[in-house]
Length: 504
Image (cartoon, rainbow, N blue to C red; front, side, top):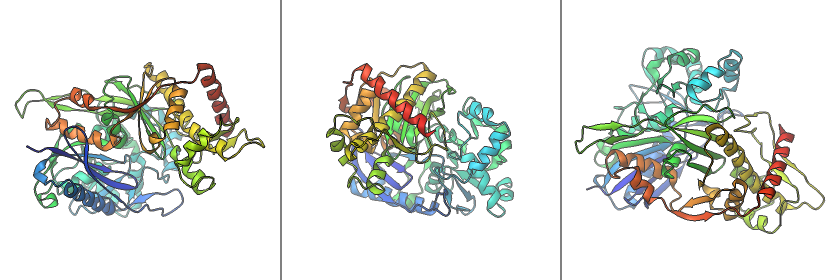
């Protein structure tokens, strides 16, 4: 019997592959970076062929490092950078242009035009998303309008659109499968999350032909098999989810009210809100978390499709990137991990607040005109105060998001599960617990994004029996209990809110 799951984790700056065993432990891992393309200020692109070749290469490397063969792999799970948009020729499989990356701002004016035309409320109600260049819909429209003959070819059914998961599945199956899952579809501005289908009204407004779109299948189901020559013999592809939803699943946030926060370049917090979408009144995004399909009995053809699980999501644009700025631009530290010892070297920030709005403010403010500032400086302020203020800003921004989440959902947070690079900073995690007033739990397995994709794939082939078995595998490596008094917590947070008001 196959003993392993292969997870393909296609990210913004690198492609990764991880082999997991039945206990959810990492057996082997491989990673490869690829080029970031900036053809104009504010534009970000990827070469789809570089995405494909790097992902295929690390998949083969991870299998080799694990000393296993394709027949030892029960299934493949795919997780991906979300919103990044690729359009390709259905016959040749060749992209018609570079991928437009989620960070790209080229369609900001298109979003303003849609907003001025009075469409914002409709898009928010149907998709759970704000009109922003972040999402895929206007990126597709831009490609159809700017690549020669693209619109006519799309209307004739000659072209295919996909987020990165869809493109990888197409390539892995030799063009046999053109499909995505609800978590990725819900990030396109075209998918009606209330009805669970592509929305013809929104497609008409965006001028996108339905023939371009992939099928939308549950996140945990048999999507197809890899071409035999890729890994020596076919491997079923059985799990798909966008990276933040996969991380939420990997953190076993299966019940309403459970939340996770990923600390990376930015922060992405997702709260499980159950089987009913909650349209935010406080600047958050409503997104689909996942949809499962279980074997309902021992028959391989008898299946039970579960309801969709929804999440509220808050995106903080600059988190760990603020520490990188201290290192690279301000040059007050040599390494990112110096910030913890600097923060510990002073009792507080001396009244200094650092608002890292380098590219505006994300949730819950959505203020693209805000810019960064360090406020409260005195003659006694030094680099330790500024470094501490940078770390505190990550925790303050996460509280901003959480306050909005609790207001929207009515679910008081009991604990926060964390992952991502900055989650390794003990000082920051303790301050986060203090600022939220709830325990912060860091898992033993920090590869939660790849692990979530593996879990989705494994459930589809009964590698894992159910979510209870998965939840039993989740283990905390360290729990940070809040130690700060409520009065001090609120005094510090009030100072942060005043600092934010200064930059808006």
